[in-house]
Length: 382
Image (cartoon, rainbow, N blue to C red):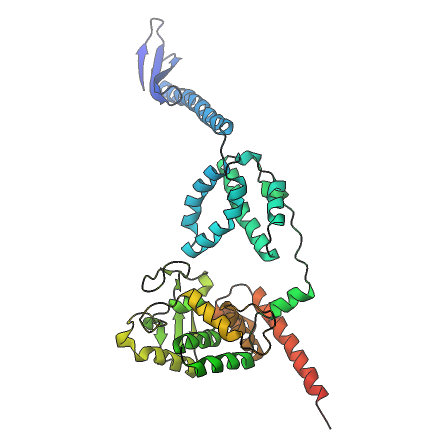
């Protein structure tokens, strides 16, 4: 700030600043009666107010430009994707991007402001999806449009106007949920068939270990020998493997699913025996990771799932069940409930913060126990 004395005896104060709107340097001024310290302070305040007023006009013009310009869904999606990918794990990125394939196929070239709730509702209803998948897609789309609202591309989130049918519990859906478990007898059948076959010994031990520990498949494949305490029969979960990414020896270790997934669990003697089986050929296989194939490579998820489904198809009561590796985790929880382990202890062991899923398993097990009780009472003879 500088000043000069006028012929009238007053003083004019000046301040230069860069006007972004005009793209050039400008000057503002204010006239006061004196050049005292108080006048200096007063002049600075008034000059700053004038500059702020001019700059606010520039910001308003910029906002108007954003409002006036037509932005397509694809443009905003690409912008949001860069931010979103920094927030979630690579495996989650892949799953989320798959959820947007049909969405972008329908709306990518449309102006984002033209998308209404009815458009998205029709897309979700016309696509053949399970109720849970439909709800998950709605969550994905809501995050995207919420970003568009926050940044200022649209005024209202169209997802607020999307109405989907409630998930009605039918007999078939209840049976499907109950079929997510393998009981001890079924697991014994599966293991016997596979061990007797003898060709895929290591894969079979992986399935048995998952059943006995309740680990997620990514957690199991990320296990390193330093995570095993043989002396105290303990196992520590510190990482998960990106099972959506590279396999073989190109391993990408990620942080576990949630903060509760970091845990140390006790393992029984059978687990120790399985670990030592994998340790037998350590010098020829892998010095770092535990669960590897004969060539020291990480098991492919597709390979593990494929063979698991094959051996499960030998079950007597297979019906129309869908067999997944995650079923072994549910089966472990079911086993703990049957053994009378408290829910809080089960949650800590499997790394859950929400007891909702545990209670679903508990409901399944108690129904089975009730059925067994009726059979025992019917067979009881005095």
